[in-house]
Length: 177
Image (tube, rainbow, N blue to C red; front, side):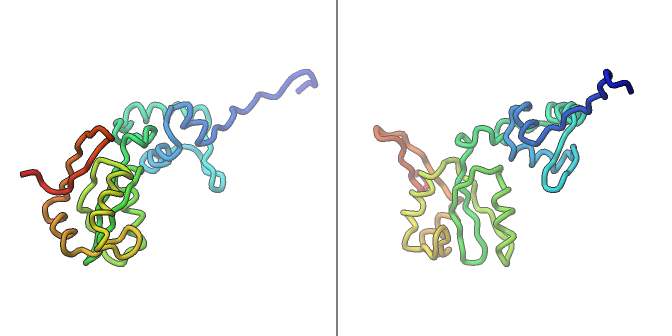
């Protein structure tokens, strides 16, 4: 090669953040998607993509992409309160993650199989209402004893009704008669 010639450039490598930005997805969504549709190359803990990898990934996302409900790019709209438990213990917690991911993560630290009682539409406000309502059954943090009103509420299917008021919303945790 003569001194005036330049070597052909290797195509630039893209990071997960670059790919997520170009596909208009969050990095968390991309990580979940890549578990089911492996692509790119690992360099330590970093995943790198070529332009060809990006084109394959772009095609896979358009063919197999998740619906808006599974797309956490708008997390606030999909914030949920989950009610899970095992034995005589119940956890009431808010999660913005895809439905079930947080529960799978929680399961790794629990000695028994977790039972999912409900995923309720709502956020921190609903979680606070439930925590106040069941405060006399609180064990520690978000954990409650499954007895009394908590047990009755779970047996009734964890009903929650949301009412619009002049000050915002009000929640009722009893079935309407």
